[in-house]
Amino acid sequence: MVENWQVDIKKADNLANRILPLLDDESLENWLVNSGFFRPSQLFQDVAKTLSDWFFSGEIENQEILETVFNVFTGDSINDSLVLSSELLKKMVWGLKDIARIVIDKEAALLAIVDWLESLNGIKKVEIDLENRTILSKKLYLAILFTQLYDCIKSILSHAPYYKEFFEIDHDISFFKSSDEFSRMLPSSPIISSGQFFKYTKDISSTRVPGKLDVIIFSGVGRHLLYNYHDLFTWNNIPGCNVLLMSGTSWAGTSSKYHLQIPVNIVLRPDESSINTIINESKTSFEPSRANTSQPIKVSGNPNKQEALEQIATDIGKIQSNNKTKIDNWIDRVEGDRKRALLLVGSYADSAIVAAALQREYNDKNVKIVALGRDSDNLGDDVDFIQRSDVSRFAEIENAKILVAPILAVERGHNILNAERVAAFGVVVFLARPFPVPNDPLLLIGFMNAWALDALNSEHPRYVFREERENNPSLASLGKKYRTHAKNYYDKIMGLPIQYSKLTATSELDMRSDIASTLRVMITQVVGRAVRGGVSFHLYFVDSAFAPKTAQRRISGMTDSSYDSAASSLLVAIADEAMKYKDNSVGSALYKPFDKSLIAMMGDSVDVKDTNYYHYE
Image (cartoon, rainbow, N blue to C red):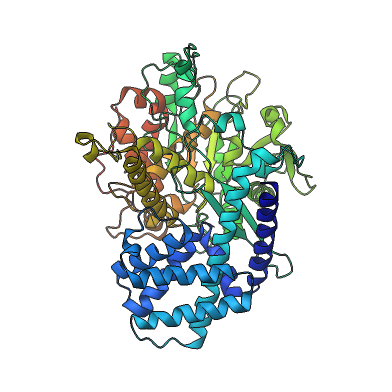
């Protein structure tokens, strides 16, 4: 057994050493970079589409047959009966397995792949030009290498608990960080095999810096433990513990990231007078920034993001017709010792860019504009910084009026108060529209974990065993169906578009609603920094990506009938989510202070067609 484990490690090393030199080919490197987080099956799906286009005129049915062949080869197939019933398809799988046996010998493997492709001419005679055949051969070779690496890592991880002590492997190495105690209590990943992801990253601007290949392991459904702490050991006649899950935003509608999929019966409410102050005196507005060209400035999705952020800093920091800056006008609407603004961006680097640009433009040089930095960063001298661990003391900094910070850095856990022990910031400004990183493994795992529990809940629309309730199915057949549905769902979310405007809504996968609910929670959490002590907030959105059609109409003076909707505007999508739950007692108790001011924007600072729909008492 020890020898086998060492063989797997050596084989994985050899495979990685075969993969990385292949990526000197720019077409292969771009293929992996553009794939984001992927499994071998995703690479084979792309190959299957190309083959289908060549041999079957892109017919979906034949593409799916080719994908099934590849899935049987990779071991990612739930149902291989289609392949087993066809001699031709079986030969295709055997051919791939023959190639896999010689995959370490690159030249021999590529020649065998060419022969395998030529064998498809037995299905339909097609002339493939040399360049296209060479590119596809390399892609297929790379996909086979990743399949073998995937299997090696799976074997290494499955035996790791037995050999960590034997080989004195450091427990803090990220490869082995999962808790053995917890893993025994968690349902396994709903994805067949072990749920690994690969990601290849490369700084395209530098040809001298090598790329990096990461492996992410999706081993189990962690949230299941949260729901079952209370009866964890009752099977052994040990009384369950009392559990308190503390989060005011874990009742979150359709958000797979934040929503706890258990009923909520009790909500702890704050003082009613504080709630009324927040609801009645808070203001939310969409005020898109404009460039010198009188065009709206878009940050999110802009390839020239740094330039766009600097343009926004210039726009909000330059003198207006009343001899004050736009940001000063916002701050002046706040009373008392709360005349401070929190400007939100996407990263620490963005914080420094905006702070520097705003400081250059801002007319009052006595005012400090501060950027938030990581505790581990060596902070420079060209911008005033405050480390994240010190941010609660921001109000103590003399003349500090504006803090620029990443959204996620202040979303949770920081109470930034003034001397009166209420929220120090009266103004919150989103300079960039937040949006999940495409193929972020945590996002994907959140989708899968939410699906895994919904699929087993007979009261949920995603429940997968409705047809079996009247029958007497075997445990094996139930497991097979569950994993079939899981893989289908996984394949859909792995193909998520990277642009908000391209998100779709279907009965099984309403990604727009999911992401809108998730970002609604994120924005609410950030606004929470401005309401501590029961005070009101002033919230502004300035990135035109929040409501692009409104921005175009307002800034360019267009008078056409183009309105924003949930399909084009994140703000409208969040308002739609708020409308779904405004009459729900839990939803209203948790979100009304934010939701009411957001919904009031619809038809006011955001142009929507049906203004009568958006109404919140």
